Image (cartoon, rainbow, N blue to C red):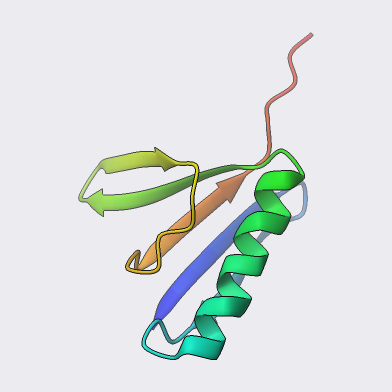
Length: 73
């Protein structure tokens, strides 16, 4: 079971999906596009302590993290 974790001001939400199910992959890709279009950065965990930024949906990723842009000032 794969998961998309969305971080925001209220904490995080998790969207679980079966990456062997074609319909679930379509929905997961829609969520990926939705959050990246809103300006969220997407990253996948490749191993312990190893995270890589991605710009396209990876159907093989077991965990994708979305976090909003940081605003300084």
